[in-house]
Length: 281
Ligand SMILES: NC(=O)c1ccc[n+]([C@@H]2O[C@H](COP(=O)([O-])OP(=O)(O)OC[C@H]3O[C@@H](n4cnc5c(N)ncnc54)[C@H](OP(=O)(O)O)[C@@H]3O)[C@@H](O)[C@H]2O)c1
Image (cartoon, rainbow, N blue to C red; front, side, top):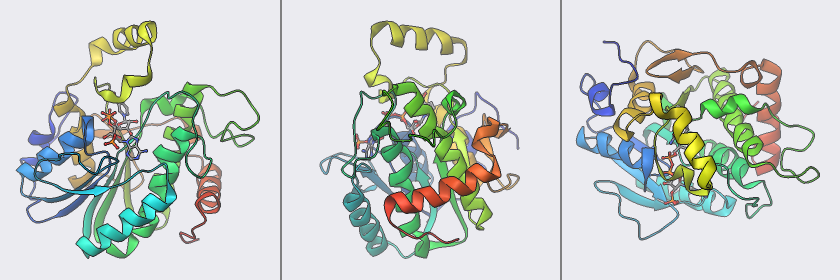
């Protein structure tokens, strides 16, 4: 079966069996994460979803508190997942923030890099005992990765002035480099650009910027149901190769700065050093 930009997550999952499979979904309280949870639960999967809010309601899923902007919280959440299940079939590293005002995580990382990439890097590392040979890791990236490659001279904007789109683009490039690094180490990992979907992600944009963004994506805008199609396709499609960048339920070509093997290796080493956790050579 082939799918395209108009297909929904429900349609993609109609032809596969995920009953009893265990899925971890970060950012499950809203937007794409919430819809990934909904479609997986509807198909009989056992879903563990995360939110920073311990009182969040995630229908049909078990809730784990996770703040990716705190490595202590990431460690606590990883331990909790491992007490809840001995096997994870799908890990959706999906939570994210976009174009935030300048901010820092507990460890002092630039907020978008810390939340979108470094928190997920550590979470994934700490969950490896629960992965089996068939387990898949789906990292939600964005077309926004084209904005910039890694800014190695100052990744956390400690010397140079903060620019929110550079910071977002860099974090989404990191998602793709991380995916490649995982694939190189034998993990079935995929990076997905979900499309342009009106979610809470735009909460930090101001009037004109929001209008311009909506206009730019108008002709290609997807519903949230369509937005998750490539995410669940990445988790289940047989025909995709590990490490691939996917959009519209097909393999796509990311910017060269997001797949350069030297950048892949450098991002891996740097991420290990940043989070203080060894995740293999
Ligand atoms: N929407 C689009 O058009 C689009 C396009 C390309 C890529 N993406 C990507 O899609 C992913 C999901 O975004 P969305 O559109 O669904 O946005 P959203 O509705 O704002 O959802 C983002 C989720 O991330 C979680 N989150 C934010 N900061 C967090 C933190 N510090 N720790 C843990 N969780 C945190 C939020 O959960 P809590 O507040 O409950 O913690 C929320 O559930 C992101 O990675 C984004 O970059 C979206």
